[in-house]
Image (tube, rainbow, N blue to C red; front, side):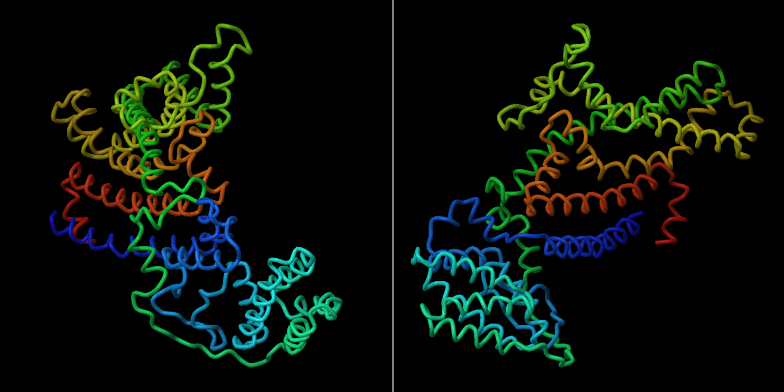
Length: 460
């Protein structure tokens, strides 16, 4: 068994590495500029002039490691630059990269950028030329040759005011040509000086991982929300598993009307969408809109976790608000869990060892609890361990409708507000928990089904 555990732990490492890489690459596909968003959150993006802001921007960029190459190894066309961290903001950088794909000469594109940026800086303090400054900002976002050349006529109207700057800029734009040169691959090794390495080594760094909404460190913010999510999910999971086990064992072998009514009722709850069931419970059991008798439970809404209050203190304080969300999750899960276990029990009943046990005089109660149930728990264990990752973000609908500040609601809020550091940290957390849950399932198989240990070990 120890060999099995060691081998499984070794397999976990490359799986987690893949999760890290995929999460990092997804984070690079998000819109917006993380550096600028952080400066906006801290109130530093509007109170500085251009040169001062660029200095602050580069300092913040260095803190996040965003001036570095993307990965350990870079494979790119020969015309792409080695380093472009000095181009800010990200909107201009992306436009220049797209423009460079047509021109295929970074020196021309970079000189054009420098000329345009220098001209803009001269106009920053001149209120009379705001329209020209606006046009230059639009020009800097032009990501194709045709789009850049469409500004030539506009720039020519300012030629008498700024002859040297305008003529130089127009000359550069007119020289833009769509190169037909075939791109040649270029491979570079960056060692540890890359964004992925910096990102992985600073995952737990509160200075580099901050929310773009309120500036709070990401991990403490997630862990505070995780307390409510785990409280809600664990309570619902324990109640749901316990009731499903009892109900399946009670229904096992029964064909009476009561058993059929209970199964049909649970199927109805399982078929009903969770958001609809939760909404109905809020409407009919927390308000007086349909009569005084319907106002049974407290209004929805739970405050953030109080660090000075104990776990049981918080649960008791908001016990009334937790009843309906727990009830929704239990009702939805019970139908599936009980039906799955009942199906496994029926399959075990048809196996030859049942006939052997009965021939030896084993009574039905002992046969049911000591032989059939333990052997039928394999798929049950798989379902329970597979539900562990869903306890983190799977309750997003419940948390949103009942206004519970858990991880699921935090995930939705962070996506809505483009708070990507929080979103992708939660995704990374879910990926890690998923990998660990599979390892836990394998260990539980060995504990509850020791006869399968040799077979599992030989297939590792």
